[in-house]
Image 1: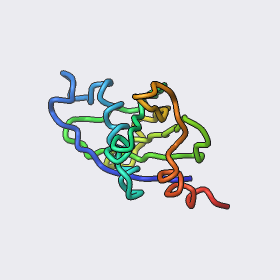
Image 2 (image 1 turned 45 degrees about the vertical axis):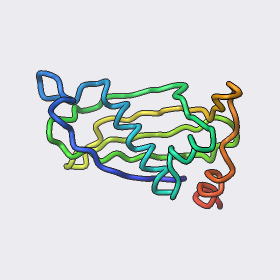
Image 3 (image 1 turned 90 degrees about the vertical axis):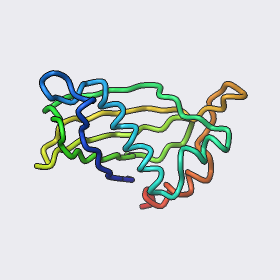
Length: 137
C-alpha cells in the first residue's frame, strides 16, 4: 500500500455562505493529493504528459461526513491500496481537519490514456517501478 499526505488551507473563495467548503471543491483537493502523491515518488504529472500520457477521471465517489470550514488546514491523505496492473489506477482520499477528525472520503478512478492514439494504455513502466516496492510482501 502506498500512502501520501499533503495539506491545503480552505480559502474564502472556496466556501459557501455558511463558511463551509463548497462540495465541488473536494474533488480539487483530491487532485492536489494525487499530484503530490506522485510528486513524492519523484515523478510528476508533467513528466507523464511529456511522455504523451494523460490521466482522465473515469469515476469519482465522495462521502461527506463533516464540513471543512473556512481557514481550516486540511490534511489530504491519498492512498493506493493496490498496485495497478492495467490502464486503471484508483486513488482513495481521506480529508482530516486540524483536530484529526475525518471529514470526507473519496475514491477517484483514472485511466492512463494516449491522446494521440485515443486509447487506454497500461501504467508507464517508470511509474510502476516507483510504486512496486510499496506493494512487495
